[in-house]
Image (cartoon, rainbow over all chains, first blue to last red; front, side):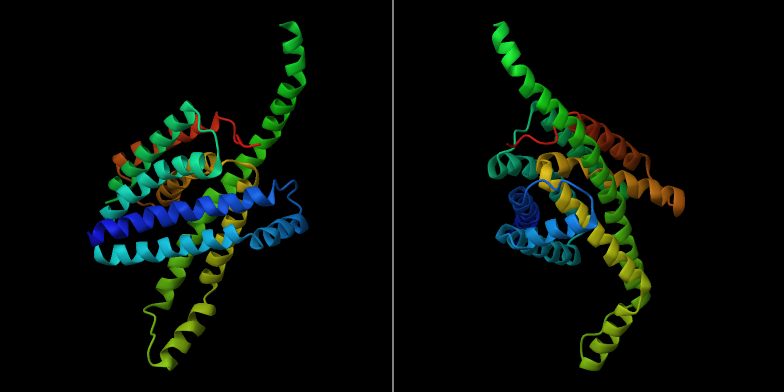
Length: 124
Length: 151
């Protein structure tokens, strides 16, 4: 049960945090140049978006939850976490950011999730 | 019917033009991310190993730990690298879909395996190479979709 709770926190807070950062950046709008002054300007504008702070806090929560999980469980714990994050990410993109995930993008996301799983299993 | 085609043409050209300019800068930012992210983690890990176990109590231990963390060059290089990673991440998300960037940035797993093999002479298991190959295939498929599908 504690296992499942920790697991959900890592996936939801990790992916949710990234989705919130995405939402903030969509509000900021497209960065049109790579000039350092423009980049600083974009970053400062991003820091004024509430979604940015929600996102970064959630990412921090997921990070510490993962550290905690790894101190209790084996590294194999991260396998389903990372694989599920890609599925949750694409779903979140559709629901929370109104992105259109085409059939081929789903195929790519699934391949990536499978590949990442093999990489982590292959490391152990 | 012809009229519809003609009316659609400028819009389609506009979307094609935007598509062409979006892709290179999206790939550039993802390249920066997949190099700087793992590099930052490795440098930070290396730096923390040099520092050793961090003492928290008594306060004098915490202070001396803090001083040794802040005076370790690899830690500063690691932090800088991770800042570059996050800025590239923010920039690319300002114009590209999250559902495009997230799978594409998993190329980092390939970079880590390749760098470990070439620079550190690490053994990379066949299963891991297969995983990297499938990730590459997945990223290839994702990269053929439009980077941006919102307004």
